[in-house]
Length: 209
Image (cartoon, rainbow, N blue to C red; front, top):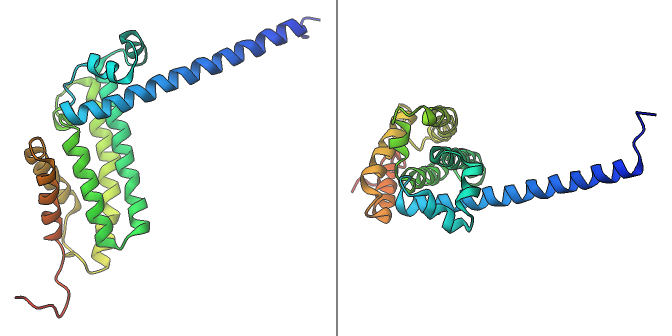
């Protein structure tokens, strides 16, 4: 009967399935290694770093890199998508662990690291290159919505002024990081901390001098 497979056919199918699984596992390891290497290289050299440097750090050949990321922009996009998602997801985690203002301040530092250590992010977002079109959408859909509840919680807690605009603060921190991070990342973090602390409302009854 044509609908019944022989034991040989079944064994061959099982072997093929096992082989496919191994190939998928190998591919995932290569992609993970390339993504991690790209994060490290972008942090030290910016997104203009060569793909050869990334492949060498990942311990894979150029053929493997181009098989998974046919264009250099594909790798940049994949890393930045991943980093933006992680930064966005951190907002809820911080909100659950810390009081409102502390959660907000911690997240803004996380955001500052994203903007600062991924040098060239702003350039990619505003390059007009069709390959990067999705980055701005990802930014708008993930990061802006993530920070708004943190600001809202701090406002409800009376820790920042009610008319504080989350989008304006996000833009201000971005500008601060992009202008200061390259040469002195620690200085940029301190500047962000001072800027965010300046949003905090004075505690009632505290001395003004």
